[in-house]
Length: 210
Image (cartoon, rainbow, N blue to C red):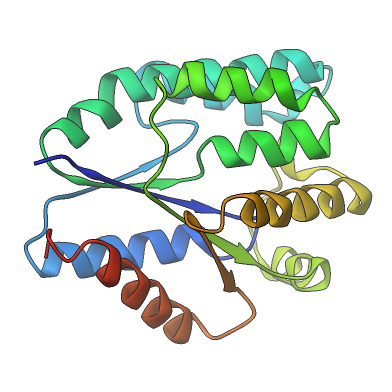
């Protein structure tokens, strides 16, 4: 049985990580083989790269280095974790994937989208997510959520509003270009309502697994 690959995307504070955890819990409760991971991260090598990418000490990192490091972390995670899990027939839930690279480094940093697309395909071994949830919120909501959070901002979060605007618009352009894969979710709704919507969409896609 081939596995099923679901990714969770959106600007920071959109609620994607919480919804990924909620979906994982529901699938596990039903006895479905599921793996919840994050990009970048998950493997030892990828987590070390994540530390470099997010450290506020590395503000001098150039955009090209940032792109290549995200890609390198993803390639290791694909090789070591994602592809083996999918080959075992598991449902893999990934908190961010290459759509984030397209949105942040492509639309946000204005790096060449053609190059990014090639790197995305190369690092992912050509494996496209089967389903992607894009949680869309306004910049005002994101700002309010950051203000109420006690967590310090990482390097990728210490950016201006113009950058976040480009990233958000980039995500929406990705969704428009891939309507059969990307489901746009209104992230302004309550957590429970969003969780129900995510579950219903997931269930309709993976009935053979649950």
